[in-house]
Image (cartoon, rainbow, N blue to C red; front, side, top):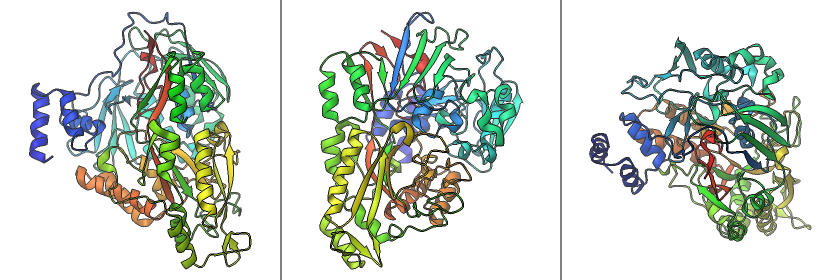
Length: 595
């Protein structure tokens, strides 16, 4: 679609000749997804769509208990420490950002009075200043007023390196100024095309200054509110047993009229994805189950009972493998997989190239995931204009064998290849989950045919995705040779998603392993392209720069994408919920109700 045609369509939406839905459908036909279409409208002063879930209850309360099941149990409630999605889901029940993302990629005000636009003075023409007007009359759960001071404090808290916040990457290169009690300015150092990152969505939740003010920096882990939150959200904290159960009660002073519908909320952790699906779809014991990484045929059989329904929404999430180029078995300065070390064999590009050829992605999609994912070679898959068209995948055992032969890795009497006394023997780790164990088995079988020996390691999900810095088995530690999991893309723009590939985000002991770059791999060209994309206002040039970052890591075979994931959840038939692929499941839990 050329620029002239695009401008005509935008003008049509402005004057009412073209509906918003028709505009999004027209752009989808040429490969521009709904989230980006919505951003185009916002930049051209067309107001964002209102809430994606039509809320029907005429009064707050009366809905009884709402019971959520997370088979990966939450372990903490401070959203700025929540590197795992299950902790982000739990924290969002109590804390709120200025705005969140609905399933169509629309930015929806939460603690903000409105979404900033050029028309309302919220976006500067040069792309360096965003002005947020805050909703008035909002109270923290202890009755104190929510003001601009809390927003400014949240920036200071997350940006302080000593806090070691998971969200620090969104706050370190900005300045936040209080204009008045209900207005703040976010000032970027350079033109910033994707400004909806600080204070937005999963990284944007606002903390009360009066509860966290004494715990900024080195004392951040000592704050009582890390486990007993005081937020602005629809539910107040009642009880929390980390790794087990979380309970909240309706916030009677919630700032949205007639919300929330439910009197209490219970988040139960534990079990596995199959039992979670069964507890909703077959027994109705719970109202909602998250992240159903379950074989699609199993879900279809469960749905036939009529008690519940499966919801699968598009997202940018990716199931992928990391090949560790550092040494996970040698400790340096109190940490393994240190950037000061080099993996004995996976630092060899030829070994990584061969391994990538031993992944049968099509079979993994067809026989395991079904609706849950699509085979891919690209780390970024949504929105489509950010997906690399260059990256392709192939399953070829013979080709892998030849690459290893030519690289000098010879099979020994035990059938395992080695070179210079270093065997191709690896520990391959993931979380305990049936589809993941089946994926491991498929890859192990192919690797055996190429002389590579894999020891399969499966870690309880609540441990694997824990934010506990003392735990050696967390995915961010990467204390193994090979690791597999899904990483979530929290916005319909992949800039923050791709900071997993920059050198300054490497996970280390120093940052309590909360750096986003779990692979530890870095490339100066990727850093350069990423920094250029951060200030490039031309959307075509910017997309090309972000695609380059993606391609550098995938072509180095350090990051091996497997499946572009949809977000699959289950709910009982009469639960009206707002499931978004661009935010956490509880992003709009205040608006859930029972029909």
